[in-house]
Length: 404
Ligand SMILES: NC(=O)c1ccc[n+]([C@@H]2O[C@H](COP(=O)([O-])OP(=O)(O)OC[C@H]3O[C@@H](n4cnc5c(N)ncnc54)[C@H](OP(=O)(O)O)[C@@H]3O)[C@@H](O)[C@H]2O)c1
Image 1 (tube, protein in one colour):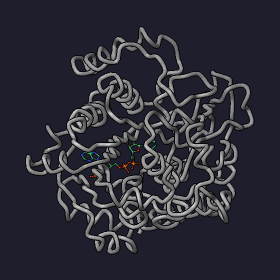
Image 2 (tube, rainbow, N blue to C red):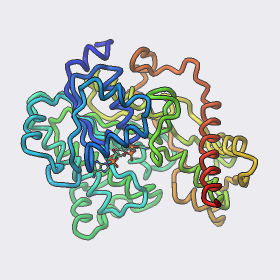
Image 3 (tube, rainbow, N blue to C red):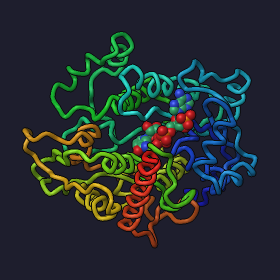
């Protein structure tokens, strides 16, 4: 087994999508500066200037060093366009040279319709897998999915595998013709339902990727909620809107709602785990599995970090926000007649009790060095508190600005 990431990545040419996103930006930083990748093609929307400005805003102190490596080639395209809108010359150059594809681009909006979610998340991935299958030297196709592809399961254990959910080809065809997966209701007649159409589109993608591409060296990585970075590219690095729990805190501070959250009878004190993992650990886990040639499905979840309960999350929000902020309490109930707060209902996962396994990544826990999975010196409670304070400070600053 290889132990030095650079000795592996120095020989890899990578095609990265979503490189201007929260996770993709962190991967780009690591590929360029931490593991010395041979070359990275980065698909970006709009223009190279736009992408560079986005990365500069997210990583002002690191972007110059990334660029200076000379290893990054931005290519302008869009995953919703035929062949990603890429030039024939670029496509054949990639087919010739690329050894690893990391597909991180997605529309992560929880409000998207089925059709939009499928057009952005499913169809492009299927095309990329088909295209990648023609590459001469492809050793790994990494698809970034989400752990909430299994949000339709009842509370309890969630394994790193595909759960039966009927005919995926038929469900895709339903969405493309009627905008709704009618045949899904036969496969899944009872709640819990999917937390969002986004998570269903990712579930569908996983099943179709596997059934259509039996020979693809496919690694599916399922992060739970992604949190800001512990340390790389820098502490608290994130892309605004890409960390669900930070957005939850922000929404709550901007307009507290009823605070009522439906939980299972077992968790009336809010003891269910709200699963989250910092983006730099997610990126390390992805690159470590890629380097070890793993094929299959892996979770990136709080078992590889620090599990935190819903009441602990709320405790942090209440304890660390500014005294000028509203401070409503939260109420956990399994009384279905109590009306849940808007945010809890919108997020759909706050009161769930899904135990994501991380068996495939247990062997990574002791990895140290450029792709360390260690937490030495990291205080998770203080980290969360600082996050809440940073969000509160920003909300307060914006509300003062709006009043001026
Ligand atoms: N954030 C989470 O908590 C979370 C949890 C589980 C799984 N995931 C998965 O992790 C992956 C990365 O998520 P993220 O948090 O980094 O999301 P993000 O910050 O919203 O970034 C999304 C990336 O995808 C790109 N993109 C979107 N639509 C595109 C299109 N039509 N053509 C080309 N590029 C497009 C965006 O480009 P622009 O910069 O041009 O918008 C951006 O680079 C996604 O696959 C997501 O489903 C995320």
